[in-house]
Amino acid sequence: MIICIHNMAREAPRTILSACGPYQKNVTSQDYEVIVVDNGSTPPFTLPDGLDFSPAPQIVTVPNPQPSPVFALNWAAKHVARGTHVLFAIDGARIFSDQLIANTLRAHAMCADAFVYTLACHLGPSVQMTSTTQGYNQDVEDRLIADSGWPAKPSALYDISVFAGSSYRGFWHPIQESNAFSMSRRLLDAVGGYHTGFVSPGAGLANLEIFARYVERPAAKNICLLSDMTFHQVHGGVATSGKVPFSTFDEEHRSIFQRGYVPPQFDTTYLGPLRPEVAKFARVGLLE
Image (tube, rainbow, N blue to C red; front, side, top):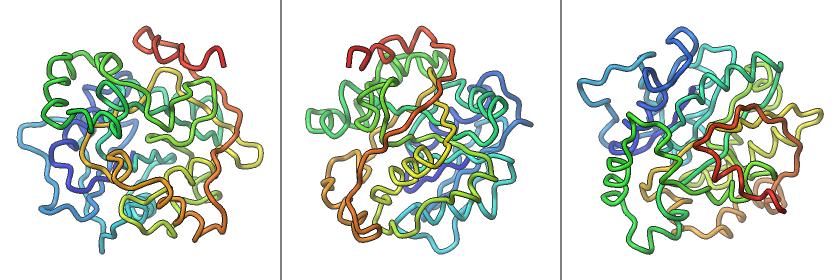
C-alpha cells in the first residue's frame, strides 16, 4: 500500500491510522505493508509520538521531489514496495474504510491479475469544490469527524460524506477514477505505472488516465469493492479545491496524448457484501 503525501501534517495521521491495524479489520501485519512516500513536505513529515500501528508504516522521502506526485509513486512501487501486489493512493488526505485491505486481498485471491478499485467520497455536506465556498473548512471538518465518533466508529464516515465528483453516478455505472486501486506486480509491469508526462502540481488527470488505462485494457478483469471506499479530507488540494479549472488539466492531457480526456467505459464485477452503512450510496444511479 503506497500513500503519497505532501504538506499534510493534519490529514496524513488520520489516513495512516485508517491504513493500519487495529483500525483495518480481518488482516494481520504479515498480510501487507504500508509505505508513506513524502513528496517534499516542508518540514518533512513525521508521525506524532505515541501512535502504535500494525503494520508499522514506513515513512520514506522520495529523492528529488517533483511538483507532480507520479514520480514519487512510481519510485516507491519500484524501489520500496516488496509485495506481490501494489495498491496506489495518490492523495494522502483520503481516509480508508476499515475493511478495504481485507477485501482487496480477498479480491486478488479470487481472481488473478484483477484490477481492484474503490469508489471515492468527500467528507462534508457536498463535494468540497462546493462546500468550501459555503463555509466548510478544516476546523468545521475536524468538529464533524470528532462528533461522528470516528475512529472508534468506522462506519461514521459514511454518514458524514457524499460521493466525490468522479464517483457521482454510483456503483452501478462506470466511474472516472479511484483513490485506492490495486493490481498484481505482474500486471503493473505489463500495463505500467503513472504516466510521467503529467508534471503539473497535483498531477492533473494522471489518476484518471491510469484508471482508464487499466479498466479499458484488453480482456480486463475489473473488481469493484461494493462496501469499501475512501473519504477525502479538505486540505486545499489542486483538484478538490476547485481553484484550477478542468480545462487546464485537459490541456496537459492533450499535450501528452494529442486528445482530450474521455471518461472510460468498462464492465466490472462487484465484491460484496453490501454493508448497511453503504445503503444510501448503493441507491444512487439505480434508476438510470
